[in-house]
Length: 140
Image (cartoon, rainbow, N blue to C red; front, side):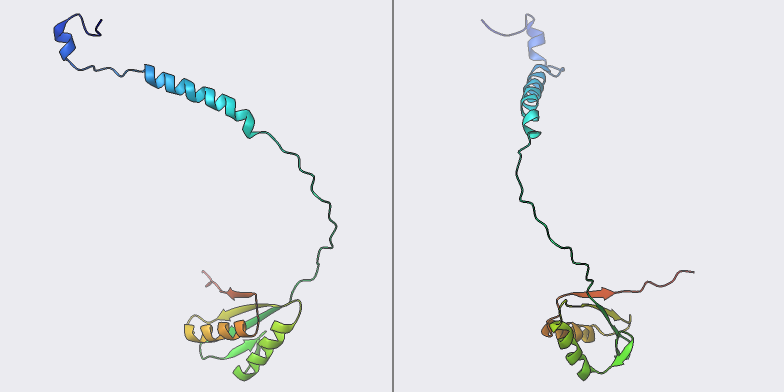
């Protein structure tokens, strides 16, 4: 028993039609797999979580704005401060609880080295929260 064409000329030409039977078989198998697994994905597990009661802290930490202009002048909350006094103020801020958030605002033309020195001094003082403030130019 052989599978061939009745006409010898037809047996030598390639088939120009796609055999859809394997594709339909694979799609039906995938459909059955998805039908079986879909209910398993929506299965819920009940978990008894412990009930807790905690007071929500309403205290907001202080915000310290440290500004640096292009000439290298430092300003602690818009008040001028010297570099020697800055280390003492950063240490006091690092030791206070809750610790204040330090926001660093620098002029566009300020050298990055100066900003890196201030960041290093804040880290040595124990400041954990440091943010950068940028002011966008006004459009006209």
